[in-house]
Length: 402
Image 1 (cartoon, rainbow, N blue to C red):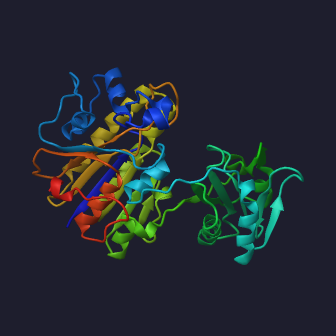
Image 2 (image 1 turned 30 degrees about the vertical axis):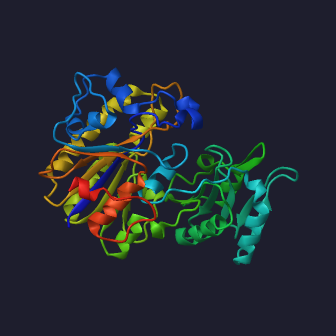
């Protein structure tokens, strides 16, 4: 047993899914990777090409040929939509349930009752006739997330000078237990007062919450965990690895959205910093699971900036080469994405696309692993590699890449 390295190039899709015209009509025609390569035919990405990127896309270009010695395939998205949080849950072995979409005002009575039954002191904050939020023990608020699609996420926002993050997380889990929206994001910061929180209270129609950037919770001592609907981390691969005392490191945005009990987590938005940390972790451990998410590709997609996206691909490719140089005979590398974000499609949102599966191990033979029905197959493959219990969903393709 060696190391299994998983690199997720956030939003690096390879073509619309067959159901896109029905589920997300605005994404029809999306192909993040191909469109960037067509716009910039001279990108220096020899390692991605060597790993079979064009084979995975299914089309070669004059400066980007098919690989003749690669382990490659692709995967469909089994989760609905094209979401980083849901995508990562799927990659770790759970196909999430379809959540509801409703304002916090629809469930405030239920949440308030549950919190009180759990021993918390709760009061309502807001205008007499408008939607309210909840103040819990005077140190945390519960309300709508106003920075994402309304009705999909509730926030539990805390003052980490006055409550520990594990205790704040207990409030979040209490809320999570009785609501069916996609996420309950539990987060907080230091050197923030209750007045700072309440001064950031805002109302948008039927939705009420704390404007998180305005509140100041992001500035110092920020901690966060996303709690998803229908997601039990105990049925995901990272939990199975921890139970078997196999080292696990989550680096990048994945550290904030995948629950890890005892392993190593590190987050930054900077691509150089994240790859350097990954190389450092490789130096620290001769076995174990290292998962890296590169977020800046996603940010370039949101900015509809193809040139920046291309520059980031060149940087990622160079670091992937450095990782390959440090790999041992028993190590596996898998490079993939979680969805698309085509900067040429005409909008700045994620796009529902297939994702590449680009594998590397020393002395491997040219292998096509086909199109997988779900990204959860990745988790099943990791579990098989480490010989631990499989995740809830997914079928391993380890025998093909060995």
